[in-house]
Image 1: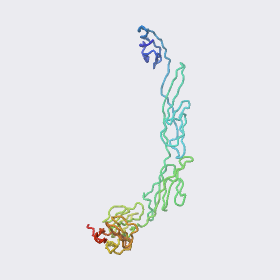
Image 2: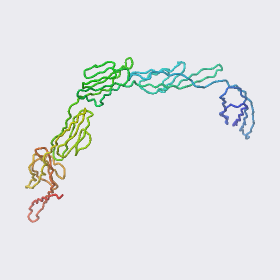
Image 3: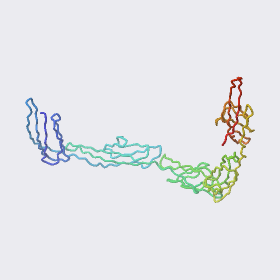
Image 4: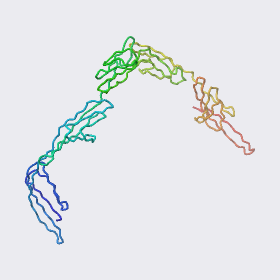
Length: 388
């Protein structure tokens, strides 16, 4: 045979088949989703090639097929495990009954799974049995288990600032259950209490035993004794147009209000203008009006440069630094400097207060001329002020 064109006609509905059209692949398959008895009529057109050409013939046959029962359905099973477990510990999740085949989302095969992290864990269960007809019955299903760490206890204070006002105390509350044990600046304080009062400044926390061998430590809160606020200026005296930092030292949670020309509620301000600055600081119901003075040294007189051959000379100061075309001249730190090339020179000086000032630039020009008649060489120095 060279070609075979198949036609399959199911006399009973429910048969599925794949048609075959080449003799090299002369196997066919039939299937049915339902059990039962089927009659199948097959017709094939056979074409044979030979040296004289080809010929065609037709063959018809009838098949009687019995489809045995098998089933695919839903599998119900249970997944169990702890809802919460201790950080650093493991949680055991179990799928049951054990007769099924279980595959977890991670790829692990088995009915038990140990986990280290919280999350949602999914497992697929499969149950397969060969029935009395020799056909497989396959049941499948999915299950999930959600696990989380035990919640860390949280300590809160009232007032929230943690300030212990005069003749008063602070209320401490630890969230969660069971009632925790309290610890403070002197060690263990109270056992099995969800809340407590204290008037002792320091750091406080609680510990909860949420399961055997699982102790959870809360956050640490600091309590502070009320003290009078202070307003500082650093440095209190600066060079002209430099910045002074104004800082308020007060209890956490204090209310701050600056007086004009400053505004806002920040504990830090930056000023460049000398003067006295004021603010109100309120804590524990007490309002304190604070003041601080920021000073500045007198402005440094801008240095002047003169030419006394062969040197450039600055007016007197404590420290000097010469510059050429805006760049520092290394080692040129004296009151005088001998120029060796034409260009713009300036000098930066520092006074006894450590404040500096930069001179106006000067253009220095050196002209060499050769007298042909007498072979006499002389230099002419020109000093021109830089116009701004």
